[in-house]
Length: 322
Image (cartoon, rainbow, N blue to C red; front, side, top):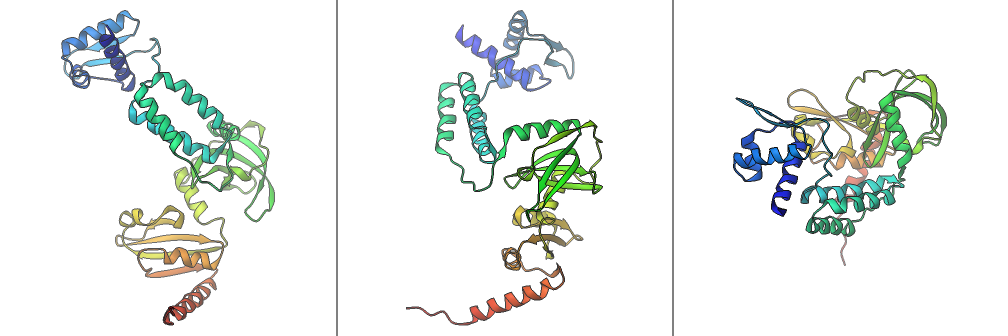
């Protein structure tokens, strides 16, 4: 009886995980013959699960709507992944530690004991070192809802230079990038898209009336990556590298800049930094030399050359050892 109950739980979990299964697929996954699958399907129907069957080529089984809800079943990999994800989320979102512990306690009865121990051990044996300000979970939840509704919002915003401005925006997308959260929104005063760090936003007030749902000129994650890599920085550079975008993507870290194609054999890397030294360090961190370089402001190019020449002089002096 226990073996049969276990098999039925596994079968209903498969039916919930995918819209359509053929009898042969279910038999293979369950490691039984197709006759056993048909018997188990009938048992599930007797328990109230509306399982629909179709015959012929392309036929099979699907779970209809309106049946009892089966508790979520987690396999070993899923349970471990969930524990790690909760640990990572707590590093960037404040106020969710207690909620995360409550969620794991609710999941405990649904996970077999051996897998539950592994998930718990992973959660206990990992830690996150993070010196960035965490974002309030309640604010993130509200912003996610505002984005879904394309709501019109008003709030104070503090820039990287500590300049406070009043913003009126139509919320569009909430994006997590580089351990920070950003709101991609249409700024009503500036008439353009803006990427706003959530931890720099003041009290958010929803404005009367609906906002407008606009089509973004690029995918939201691409827009945020471009804005974060360049817009906040006074010093910017474009580096031309030998190699296609597909060839270089895995070799250049995301924090270094935004990579884009420049013909079949070259790519452009758009970079930004707060100081000349930081920008030079980013350029030197690349695993291949640039073939061209443009800077903004133009004078930055000369300063980079002076710093590089000074470094060359230091390296030309033989090292003194005791």
